[in-house]
Length: 132
Image 1 (spheres, rainbow, N blue to C red):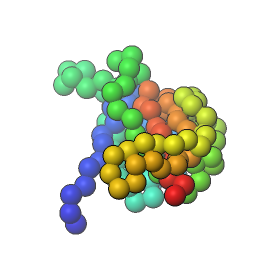
Image 2: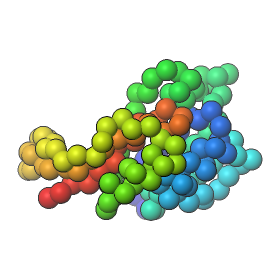
Image 3: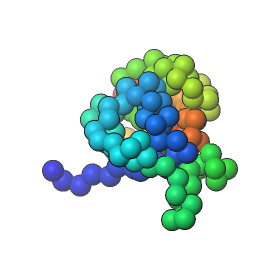
């Protein structure tokens, strides 16, 4: 199986978050504990959500007033997914546009098509794909 990383997103309302991720990104529920905690996947990429638990130091970005993580979602059609997320209730952070992405390594400059949305729980999703 190898190593995998799967984020657990803190949300204010688990059931609403499940509904949003299904509608916005085509998420599939893998398991659910009374809506408060759930495992989902988007096209095979797993992630989890849990309702905020301030007693354990867990608050979502909407409650905290900021986010420290950007979630990168790579898809075949960023324009369609961006639109679908907005229709499901996300707020536009940046429109989908083509830009160059400078990196270190064998391919120092890569072109991307990418936009971003804030989900209703304050999580920042960058939706894009590499063009070359």
